[in-house]
Amino acid sequence: MPDPVRKRAATILDVAAAAGVSKSVVSLVLRGTGYVSEAKRAAVARAVIQLGYRPNAAARALSESRSRTVGVVLNDMRNPWFVSAVEGLNGRLNEHGLQMIMGDFRLDSRSGESLLKKLLEMNIEGLVLVGTMPESPGLTAAAAQVPTVVLGAPSGPGPNVTVVTNDDDAGARLAVAHLVSLGHRNIAHVGAPGTAVGATRQRGYEAEMAAAGLAEFIRTVPGDLTEEAGYRAGLDLLGGADRPTAVFAVNDMAALGVMSAAEERGLSVPADLSVAGYDNTPLAMLRRISLTSVDTASFAAGQRAAELLLARLERDAALPQDELLPPVLEARGSTAAPGRWSGSFSAEE
Picture 1 (cartoon, helix red, strand yellow):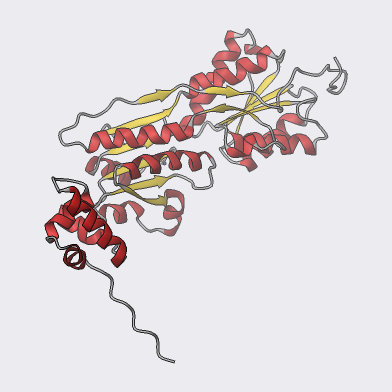
Picture 2 (picture 1 turned 90 degrees about the horizontal axis):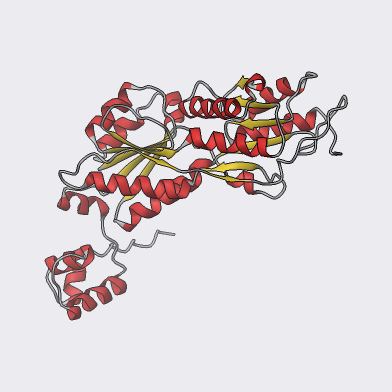
């Protein structure tokens, strides 16, 4: 049976003919610019609906000498913090007629293809780098070519970038202060010193421990930002006699790994071990997990990153200053007062 003839897509000329106006009037109505009478606007709107007209993005980009696209590069799409951050970013960009083209830098590096080169070839108007990126000449070159905002990392490639991130030092101090207020003294840290956010959060942990007079208990097990690293670090911390009563993990994923290690060691959270994480991801909010975590306001951070990029896209705009967003601690069921040591931890006081 032969395939049915595919119906030709309506063009802007078809809309103009159906509405009884010129092509330029249709263009003004679709862009929302210039003066057009209400009668003509209504006629164009009716014609668009009747014909099922859909603007051709490529043609519009050529006619306006704009792509209306923003490249968004994540350092690892598996990180749940990015979900809310990208949602906030996308919503604000869409409000201003911009769309995202998103890619994973980690996957690109493995495949050997150049994600950044592809984005630049698409004539993107701006670039948003989400998370801590590895050092890369390509990133530095891209940031020098188009306005670039870094979201969720303390620094970016080169001097011409604007950074929007959480105050990780203050957030780490909030988590430690919370555990100290519950009565914990032997508080360990599962860190990721090889990353910029990990190094900053470790400094905050150490500073707050020292401020609380607990410098002798400072102990960091190095890892990374994954659940597996948290699990391995948790097994290490919880396997000896001098195990901590509380653990502050560099992020929620590592905290979940610590909780898995505690369960494997026969320990209960929070009766035997309090665990606090960072980023307040959707996983932390699940009732079954109920993880105490530092909220980095990722949705708001994404919105703010979009706003700063839009400001940079203005002609002759000055480079906006970096912004540190204040964190908030969300205390949940994974932290409580420490048990009493008597060869093992107990929930009894």
